[in-house]
Length: 374
View 1 (cartoon, rainbow, N blue to C red):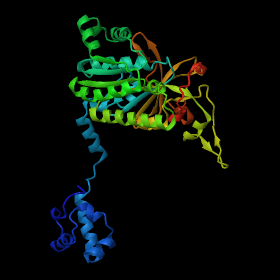
View 2: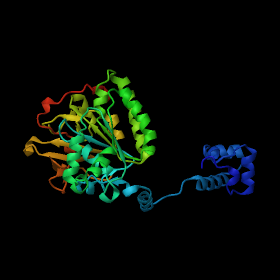
View 3: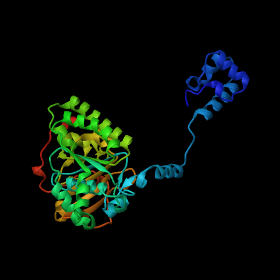
View 4: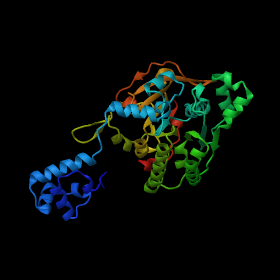
């Protein structure tokens, strides 16, 4: 609208002729000048200039929309109202329906906590027919660490949806809809991403899973700024892929040891009068997400999977970042049918607890050498 011609705007003929005489032909050119610059250039009074700018602005400015109208448009334009149910009732309620479409959802936590288990369950659910709550389409699963298990996938299906997976033909069809890629380097991963963009429409792909992004980056020899620049390209590409395809994109992230340089990066920590950082509480984990702040900003929803030593090793999945949900934690366990919540009532979190990542036996966590990714 900024390039709309002045001649197409219903200005008084006298002022429209002056604009034309001074070679100001578009709304953008008129609005780029101050009122006094226009007074001098057009040789007219302030009242005429203000009136003309008001009319031009009213024509070219986008109309206001209410929150209600935006919500109604979103519901109309996006399948399943823009969210894909995880099957975890309490978590789905907190996220207003489940994993959001068109943005990045991150699962972060220590090794063995259940990230891949959740990815397998989500992939399986997405492949199901719509009358079973699925997306009735293909899933691209980028398996970086060779953790994908077809046997475990079918076990989850058989235990959670026996009416489908006890039928051999149906089980084979669902498993055949999940396309597994195993890139061995960041360059192979880059090629996979470029191919995926075209195949999303060709193969009716309804979900993308990357398990895990951190493992790919940690395997590269580049350090510091060069590694950060490489990751920046991938962040931008994956985000644009999510927006372009309007499908759920789930990415797992590992953890690394907390260090003193990270202290100033958390808003919940208090700065004293002498400028030093005071950390209110210490936790048994001292773990943070591996890919750093730049990646964290690109993620729309962050789900942290953790285990607290003070709760008899109980595992929790918590909504640490979401534009639509308060920070909540749900206890869970892993069964033959996949991840199951022990309670659908989330515990609300406050302060440092929102971003802390707890893990029993955290001394065994490998440092991935990602300090340069901050």
